[in-house]
Image (cartoon, rainbow, N blue to C red; front, side, top):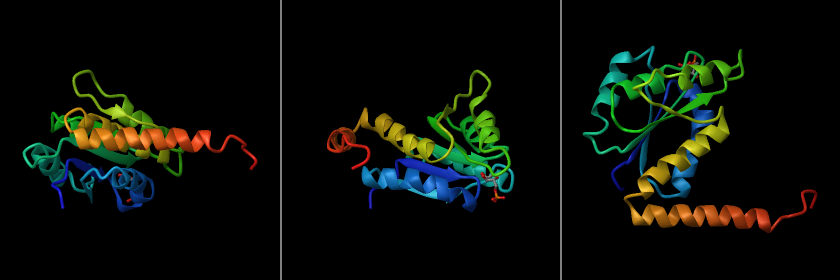
Length: 163
Ligand code: RP5
């Protein structure tokens, strides 16, 4: 098993239904990652330890998903210089608008690359993490190019939306 390059974290086990789409996309691209629940509110010391030590452990990108008062991506970004990609998980009460605004509206100086709410954001966070890694890894670059080409071909192969 290759050492993980992506740290996939989420605020709660309940986020897995969304964040599994990031994991599945990384699996499809054979990008090594680790996944775990790290809560900004319920386990703040773990968050500091995880984000603070991520770079030294060899991780190159963090993907952080959270919902509601979604402080996990921003606080992770505060503790590491690694790129942090934030996925707003769709919340029951506010449909993820709370998550989106909590993640996207960072103060200048501590960036979080914020993706779309829900599954699209999770998939795209994985693809963006892969694109970042692809700059310095020819194998990942080739697999990402093949993934994109297959995606294009699958649309071209099924032009009739009712077939
Ligand atoms: C956030 O609170 C989590 O990211 C999750 O989206 C939300 C609800 O968590 P649970 O109450 O389902 O554990 O911290």
